[in-house]
Amino acid sequence: MNGVKTEKDMSSEEDEETQLSDSQFVDLLQQLENYTPTIPDGVAEYYLNRSGVNTTDTRIVRLISLAAQKFMSDILNDALQLNKMKGSAQNARSSKTKEKKLLLTMDDLVPVLADRGIKVKKPAYYT
Amino acid sequence: MAAEGISVEGSYRRALTMSIAALCVETGFDVAQDNVLETLTEMIQSYITEVGNSTRAFYEHSGRTLPTGRDMMCALADLGFPNKQLLQYLKRPRRVNMGQIPKTAEPSS
Image 1 (cartoon, each protein chain N blue to C red):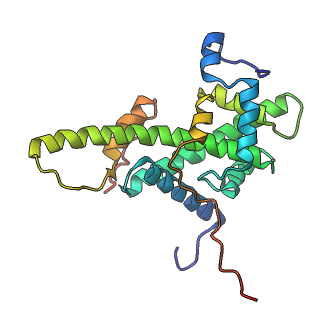
Image 2 (cartoon, each protein chain N blue to C red; image 1 turned 90 degrees about the horizontal axis):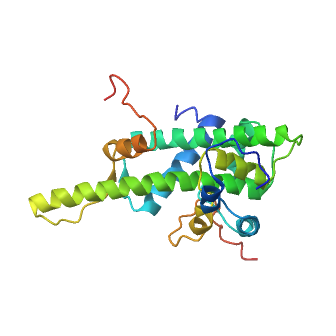
Image 3 (cartoon, rainbow over the protein chains, first blue to last red; image 1 turned 135 degrees about the horizontal axis):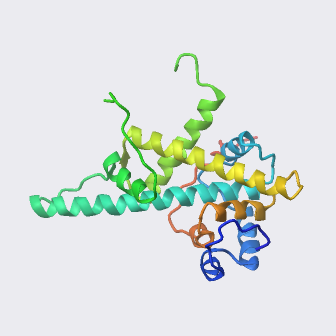
């Protein structure tokens, strides 16, 4: 990596485990050329431009959409696991196995976000 | 609001909400509460903005006016994002696409 390291406590071994090597990075950029992320390119580009990044390179725009998607997917996956765990506990009690739709509620999301250090609070007087 | 239409800002935000909803479907949820979608939209918007700000700091610091992929990788690494998982994430099996504009029927000439 030719970047500036700001995290002093991050050891190089840990870096190798989590960060891409040079060849992997080139590979990733190549793959991004024919890939459509879930977040539309135009939307990601708009928010990038708003934060002052003046780019039209689709690979860079797609890289940020992909990263944001990954961030969200991880959170949603954790919420799904939590939801399923709660669901199985309830099913065991009622012993009624009815096909139910999976509903994502704030009750699933709040503990997952709290785990990542994000505090979500219900606004006062919100119904 | 509906009668007057939505602002540019609002329409981009709505597109983000739709992406989040698509990701929820991809993960396996069938239904999501409105306030959950709103919370996640706010989060993803601020995440993109934050990565953008950090990227700008990186490339401006090195005296450039255009970002490279490396700048963004550094910005992501700075936020503690495990970049290595991106390659596997790219190849995930169930993928919901929203970015493609559906093709209209071609005129029969």
